[in-house]
Image 1 (cartoon, rainbow, N blue to C red):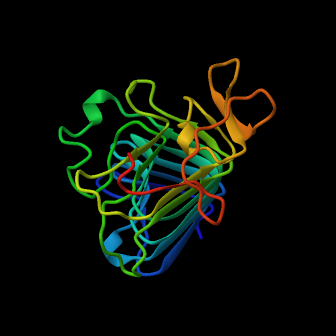
Image 2: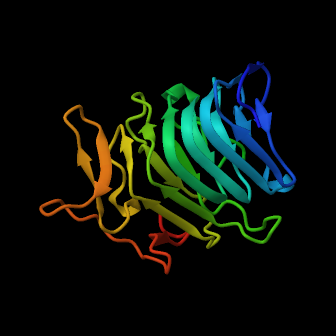
Length: 239
């Protein structure tokens, strides 16, 4: 559990977790790193991260890299990198915090997104790659995302990315992917396909967007399939 202090790494990751480890990060703690400030590895899963406060900053990568089974729970804090969060597997639950991707065109790899399984930088607040791996340590390589709050900022320099991006390798692997948004503030309009039934995104006077319960007269979101738990679902062959 980390609740204070400043941690600086000018050559690699800030904090890593593996082999069933748990990281709780919050308070006044701050991590500044070149690679992800908080990250793991799919070959040493599982991993569990809880962020309740503090600052996680990467100058040259995603601020959080979550490529393995486990849980990433975010209820507070400031998370800033060339991508805010890059996730490939696991259960992602976001209820608070400020997540920012600030990449520019020069930060993007030439053959992105098919240039490997490491952290990627594309300027989105949340980058999801749902079908990269065919195997996992526990046999569960699905990616399930629930957003009930938080502030999401995509890079103003990247006009061609969404505040939440869902990418895939060239060859579909038919892995599980679900995303449900029922709250949050967004610097750009979130994809309607990602918003849960009964909710909608409304543009605010300052040009940002807020997701909340749909009221009469609001445009309905475009439905994607809904599983038994009420979350929208998408197969890996849906981009």
